[in-house]
Amino acid sequence: MSIPFFPPDLFDVEELLDLVHEVGTAPEQRFILGARTAEFESAMRESLGVADAVACGSGTSALTLLLHALDVGPGDEVIVPAYGCAPLAATPVLRGATPVFADVDPWTMVVDPVEVEKLVTGRTKVIMPAHMFSVMADMPALRRVATDAGVRLLEDSAVAQGGVLAGRPAGTWGDAGVFSFVQVKTFGMPGEGGMVVTGDPALGRAVRMLRNHGQDGRTRFLHHRVGHNSRFDELMAAFQLRRLEGLPGRLERRARIGDHYTERFTGLPGVLPPPPGRDGRCFYVYSLLAEHRDDLRDHLAAAGIGSHVYYRDPLPAQPAFAAYAPDRDWPGARHACRRQLAIPVYPHLTDAQVEHIADEVRRFALSRGAR
Ligand SMILES: *Cc1c(COP(=O)(O)O)cnc(C)c1O
Image (tube, rainbow, N blue to C red; front, side, top):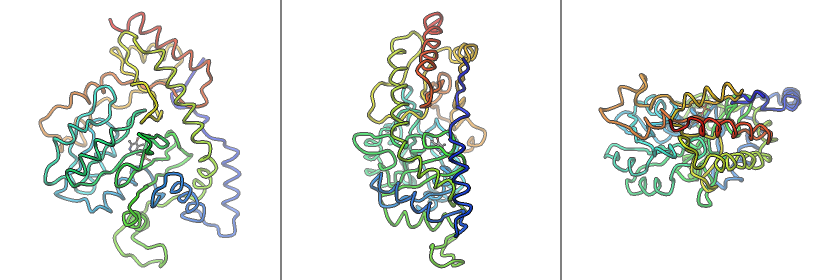
């Protein structure tokens, strides 16, 4: 049995070809920002109950557009997690602002609100947490920190689309939230794309304008402000519209696989599953913490199971962000970097494959997990 970490057969190619034909032969011959994109945006807006949903070029670009719309620039600080993907730090830097790295919880690997609060200064403009792997950040606590500090809260929900915490959907906790539709994400598609969702209509309008060179969508070649090219593909909008309805079912299958793993891994020596439960969870990736992580990875590879180490270094330890890393330590992030290992959790894994993966993790842990 060979089980890749990311499956090659994510999408229905026949459906994609049908849509190429449909979009390509439509009378308006419009390939970006057309009726399908508008329809996709309203479907997302309605499903989340937000004021605006703006489709754009990528998740990274969604963060950039938001920081731009909030006038984040030189002299401003943006508090981001010390453990996570590069855009969290790169997008503030590219606006001329300073990323300030807050440590993460060593078990859940999401940013610790207590650490965030300690880092707030008079220059803080935005707090930008991200959900990680399968666990949403502690948004109620982060909302309180942001409100007390009088700063904006941007929620990087790139990996948690469809997750719900305390009855409130991921993406709707901050002033705005961000999704990514890059291939491997839970609502991925065969191309690049992202989305900004917000309850603030003025912020939505600003992002809408910035995504297409500062135009207002009515008068072409009238540029109200300096903007970006971050538009959305009509073919992808058509594809996502067809798949939106099935998303809850696919997320439920992921969550069931995750529940099963957690049940089988609880109490194993040297292997720690994520905290059990469904509230504030969305299984983009199932991440374990393993004492002998690299050996577990080799063991799984020998059994035909693909796995993935996400981040080998904390963000402030990356050469790219060294200039923004003061002489501090991020022990939670370092802990995660040494131990995190993700195993397959995609919805079309068969029950037999899931059992094989769980069996092999257990076999490794029981023979040598703690030694
Ligand atoms: C994937 C991801 C992004 C970037 O999304 P892209 O569409 O790849 O640009 C940003 N933040 C997080 C947390 C992500 O997982």
